[in-house]
Length: 100
Picture 1: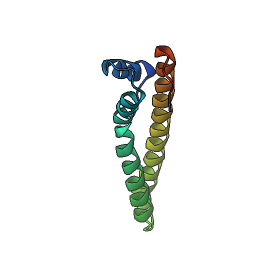
Picture 2: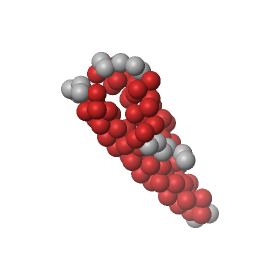
Picture 3: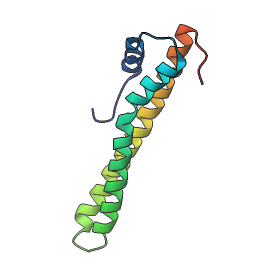
């Protein structure tokens, strides 16, 4: 699904780095969360566009769904970021490396 990732996927990507260096692992985790930046951009674009379109009477029918979709995307991005952070910390604990 759009803007969703599970812990096993994150841990698999971190394992593919084949490194125990926290800096390398942090960089890999940041690469995974690059999709979240796109999500935040989409959130703000849809939210501001929905608000502007809703200023007209006819535009309300398009603007309100845009605003609702924006908040849905924002909730998915927040959940994805939490999952990535939790998996990153869990993986560091598994390999016995002190994180940042």
